[in-house]
Length: 234
Image 1 (cartoon, one colour):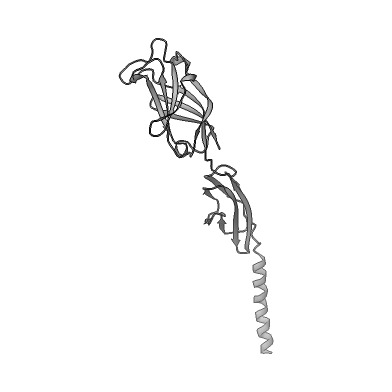
Image 2 (cartoon, one colour):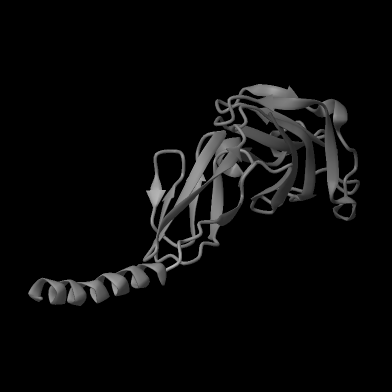
């Protein structure tokens, strides 16, 4: 009789324990993402759509992980990355894997056009360039040491007045910069003046640091001089 009573007392506990487990549904792991399929480095944002979970583990496919609900990561190299999200709750765990594609970073930048949006019409001493007709403007591209790479005198635009701005030089052959982490200087001149004052002004650019991302159009300013560069990346 004592054994029967003991068994009877244990059975309700076993029943309620089983019922308690069944009251917690299994988690569902899911997410969306944005910012992929662009050139590296690329920041990808992840939006967690999981349910029935209390904790989350993200594995980004590049050796890094995170435990936030929503999260993001920067992929510094191109490739296909399997991103795994594991959602864990009282009812257990569930995982989902989605592939993130990042394009390779470019190794070449080409200047295809130079637009002069604004520029000084006199030098620091007050000397005006080619008055009253306005300067005959052309460009040069120099390397970091100041040596000439490209002389655009053949594309000069004559008698430029303030009202003529902006003016655009379309390079006959796009100017190649490779690797993209080197400095180049773009300077405009007044063709008519032979002394030191023929330098109107210029800017220095380094494609890897001067621009955000890999734009096809980028504005660079130096004092009263503003250029817009038309760019190509490969």
